[in-house]
Length: 270
Image 1 (cartoon, helix red, strand yellow):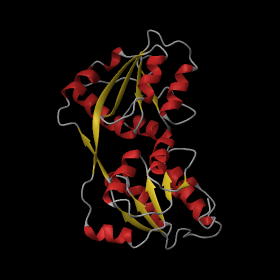
Image 2: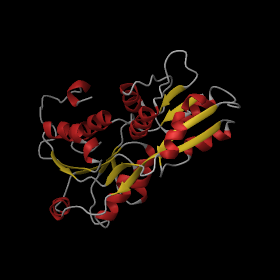
Image 3: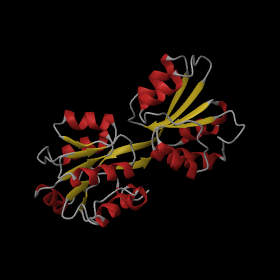
Image 4: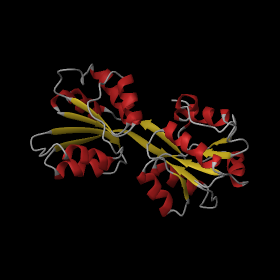
């Protein structure tokens, strides 16, 4: 969803981010729309991807588990990347599920992940009110004892165990299968690093891995207010000494964009 579709008030200014230098650390192929919206609002965008999302070199195990996905009560997607790589595997296996009457239902961590899930033909049965891993656990906790219920969670090979451990503690049977890898970018062109080091107004982080990789690439020498998605990302940024300036309540790129605009409309005071 673009800024135009969000229909937020720009207080008569069509370029509320005019001259604002914003660093975008998300993978390039996943940040084009966000960067375009920022540029359209007047920002000077510095694209500095700090991580790469890669499929597994060996996806035999993933394919085997996805081929058996209809045996699970629930498939839980905690990110759009999990959906994409799961969908690729499902296509290889000729697997479809999540429709009316299917035993296997789909739960997505938030609205953006749900939108991506639906775009691949997976109907979404549940979205937690709080769009986090903890929110997913609380959603199923509200349904009572999970004894006998089975869950499949495709995830990054580096994912935290918040959801899997929470569901197991509630009695669920959980299978976590790596579906992709988040790989840190080890080198950035000198001109981009030089541009960032000349001074920026805002850093944007969408995952803990983008924070850690950025910090390593700049050797901790670049400080600026940061905009983050989600509490785990915020915690990682704070741990490394960054000041959280923008932290939207909803965890989508459109909500992040809206919160950034509101922050600078308020003269960078939140």
